Image (cartoon, rainbow, N blue to C red):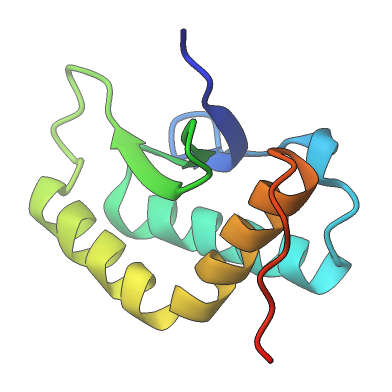
Length: 112
């Protein structure tokens, strides 16, 4: 019943970035911005960051950490996510619209 799809993510543990190839039609500039955002997040607070579309097409920023990771900054993680949601609001809204139209088949409701 888990209808979530991971768009991208990064891990401070293995120093890797993941981008879901289903979204390779996104402009390269957006792909690059997501890459930089994820890598900088994990370099700053540690752990793993995933950018996920939930079943409704809403974009979620999720973090997780390994149980024994004493360097993970839990408070910094929450603050950084709030900061990203503010600073990247337009990007996230555009990604949600893209996902809803191209993956969920909803009608585009453009500004008139």
